[in-house]
Image (tube, rainbow, N blue to C red):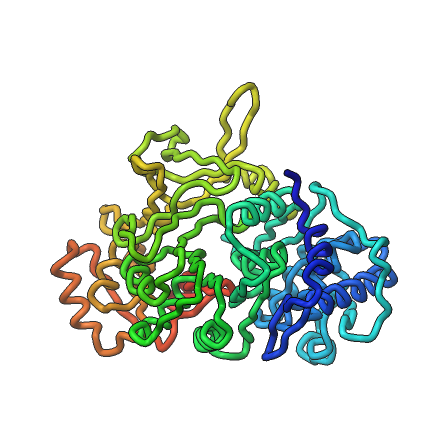
Length: 501
């Protein structure tokens, strides 16, 4: 069965015209309204832009910004989401890397002096404009770029990950086929659009005629999310474990019986947190999903019912089995394929895999891939940088990042082990261990916690009873709140910079 997200959206705008497509800032917007905005913005694009293929979109929390994403496709363009919360320097860097000359924005951003220094033209998508006749819409083929997302790069500059429609359609086809979703479902959308984990929250619901309930970016995310879930009986809730951790003090008071799917992704999910949360969503299928941005959202999935025991390794929930048409290998440092039960680097291949970083030096990227010959074909696997092993049931167990494995005084140390023992003692989930090179040129461990003020001595004494001396953090720093990335993950790069000051 072929699948096209661009065709599916327009079909469902007609089929479910009276349903809410989006619920934003206390107001519902029907599929009919969404279609009207898409047709208006598409016409605006066709009339004002000729040779530009990449279009920037400021990701305001409004119906115009969401409609603008899809309008780019119907005008034969590729959208590049620009997060308004990012520093101007980062936005400028993305604009320079992509060569964007036009940015779509709603009225609030159009009048904002903050963006006056960017060397681009702004198109106000909130102005009144006639609708483009539906028969003039362009439906992109599989080889066209759908969007480019920018992730953190090792050089300090954001790295562009282009996703083609072939990859996006492959993921959404799997989502439509595998999830029991109807037009009556209500999705939580807590993510920045520039984060790949947002796709199941703001885009996948449109495949079913379902509704998207967005969390305003200027409010406390976890409080707004909880209010939306309770007040509107949301049924599909996807979050990062870091966001869920803020709910923990209220778990005993929570009973969310309308939640049908509770999905986690983006970072390691602690088993203890998952077990406690499962009591709050007794009727939900709980899932832990995994996938780098390079594999279009997620490509592995572990699922269990609230009453079932959880597969885990070192206190971290399994990342499960392949989803969709993705294939996996585990390799060692010498690029030798490992057997079941042996730990190594996870590699992914399949139709969801991207084709390469945006305008990168291919020679410098060669270490990112692993190749094998199979049935006369040369298959390309992406090296994820994540350490895993495959158990006897076919589940992949997450063991940490390759770059979280450090050498301290000649000993090999997994930072995840330090985090797990600290997590067990403190009862906290938002913490991170960072490897830092000191003035003597040797590596030491700094542990950052959130909400553990005045417990540093007790924690250190506890760790001394659980870990060898070389694994005890040199410094334990408590912060009111750990820094988060746009996708809601703990921002380890920022913590490392703080540690080096």
